[in-house]
Length: 191
Image (cartoon, rainbow, N blue to C red):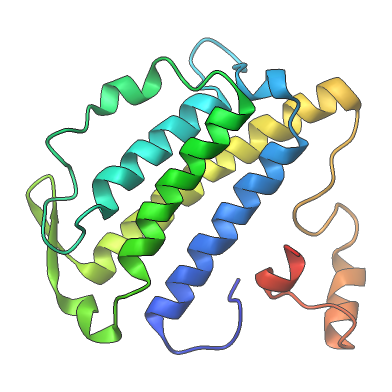
């Protein structure tokens, strides 16, 4: 969902990243503390592990974005799936650190930068391709966070505040958008 009408790829991309960041935060806020560190089954990752992985990916991809390969030599991806943060506070600090790398790399860019070449694991990507790749990657993992957070919240409390249009409310929501009572713009929905 676009934040507002724009023909700027960078503004739209930054808006999408902010949307997914906020979506993840709202999901984790509803999740009980123990749910952040639990798994649904032996093959699943906990929310804490997913956050550690996302933060590690962000640190690697966005640090020195235009001048070094996106897979930094000091990244050890496999360890991102081991020994996650132990507390909600540590988890959220790691989350914020990862997003800081992303926004510090992207906010100064201009539309003219989109055609530059960057590499990820030595493979060339335009800046636009690298951004698209990461939007998809983070959306994937934030969907996993949302799924797990909803499960653990419902198991513990029996409730979940919908982060989109609640079940059975589509027609009502569409009518409210059409009459100007509500907006489908993500920035307004996430306030």
